[in-house]
Length: 369
Length: 108
Image 1: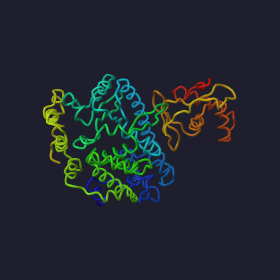
Image 2: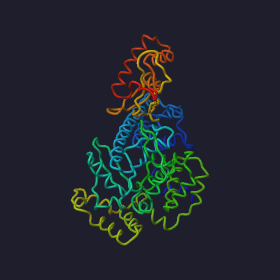
Image 3: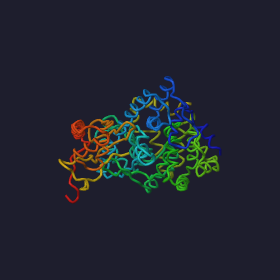
């Protein structure tokens, strides 16, 4: 399969200069401008870099001389980068507090996504900012984890549909901790059928740590982080953000990410097609040079009818949470668990039914797109 | 880059005064214009220029006078000018919990 066809099916591209910034540090065919951008183009670029959290790549590329900029532009980029990095440090401080709380409650939490990627996949964590704290929690610890955070003043963004849903079926729970920062507790890595196929136990078997201040913080190994980056880029939203594709490309270029192992793990979860979509989109959007070990695999991959059917509800304008839910239902084994899942989805508890935005959220889930 | 101090040891003997070290719990990012550091509480602090250099020097515990000596040599400035600035910087960083007086090493 031609990798570029995946990208065309996945998403709209932001401005091309932003893509060039996103490719900073990667072997890309895209080139920076040969002189500083005019004011209007610069303002657009800086706004997009802020939104996509790419100010690290922008300031580094100006500082290392690859991106031409005026003194004023450099000063503005540095100020934006200081602001994002300051927020990252505050989030890291919250992360340590949350890990202490969960550790005291006996919860085995592993750090996921932004924070872990910043420290283990990127050459410098200043190159990867993040907006929240993400943790992988064993299903059987979900209740304890939520209770520990709520006990410390956090509140759930959405109630659990029925007791035990977080433990058995949910992707996870989002909480807002005092200070307004979000902590996402993930039982698995995706909504829908892929959430049911991915095994949290498999993920937890391959661990690593990174240093945060005076602490060793537990996370997935780099190959696990790469796998999650691919799943998140394709399944996490209708259109992948540039920072998500940058994560995919950065992970796949990391010397300690084992591509054979990555494919083998994806195979056990029947998720090779997701990998191919993520890689195809990243390589196309960031105009990356061929990396035969990776791109040849994508070309050789055959997307069969089952994978097309499974992935369709996740992608682009056809993203459809009802079909995702039906996909998950089909992947749940056993009559009783299926009945429990269906009951929780169709007849949630009073707390969820009485939410003022329930009808708006319900309409968003089923409206035609 | 995570900002964490090296374990205090006896390899850097002060010429005078107490030694300073990075607070090991400090979190940080190295930016093109200096360090951004967060102590245990409060907002992150930006250390540009020579202040950033003070943080770099404290990768190993040093006395205030040793920090000043290093900066005098690096920037070719007068000691009278540098020493008070180093003192001020260390006190400021101490106040936000980013540096501290060095703890004795494993051998005391």
